[in-house]
Amino acid sequence: MESMATTTIAASQYDINLILSTNQSKTDRHQRNVLRLFDAITVAAYSVSSPYLPLLTFAMVRYSLKNHIHETESAFAFAGFGYFHVVFKQDYVRGKYWADVALGILKQKRAISATVRVEWLVYGHILMWFIPLKETSRKLFETYHLSMQVGDFRTAMFSLNLSTRFAVFEGENLQILSRSIGSNLKNMLKHNSECAKLAVLDAVMVDEIRGEDSTPFAVFDGLFLNDDDLMKDALVKKN
Picture 1 (cartoon, rainbow, N blue to C red):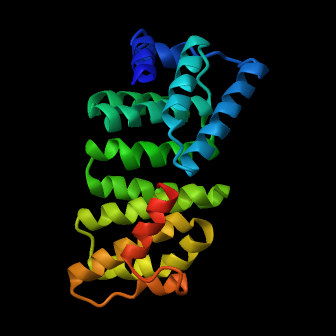
Picture 2 (spheres, rainbow, N blue to C red):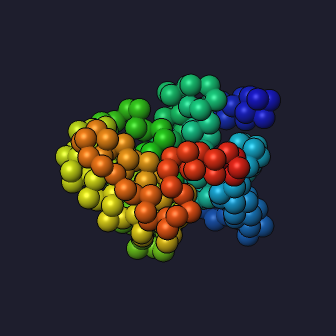
């Protein structure tokens, strides 16, 4: 991808210490508004699985680096840049590098509302390759609670979903997990239906491993009866 290559070349001129030490003490209002606009569009693009999401992320990274602006919105862009290194290039080391940049910016800014989205992306999609799954699950569960506190229910449900999934693979008690997923399904459906669909599949997986009958699809009140229905829905929505 040409845009990613261009951004990677531009970003190679900076190391993490330079980025964190050259942040403007006070961001120009116009520049901050540009970042906020980028951020809003990026979140919307993610929500609809837009193919333009990587391009928006790369543009935001270049803008932040060029203007030495490393606000909370930039942190999410840098985290996304790291994520796309993992997804597109299987470059886990470079992915972690930009994840660390994002976390470093958050430590300077301490904005909780931005922290939850960055931590969901960083721990759920990048650092899980570098730290124990148990720690990843715990961190995402903390992000879930923090997201609920600040009213970011979408990120909360995504974090809870990933936390539960990692708990399965790190060896948590399956009976406890089955009960936990079941008790959270209605809340997930209320705040984030896409996460509820994923959680239902996790419930089926856990119960099949336990050798138990599973009826989590009942939460959809007949809209989806099995995993085939969910697959058809995903194909229609391209997510």
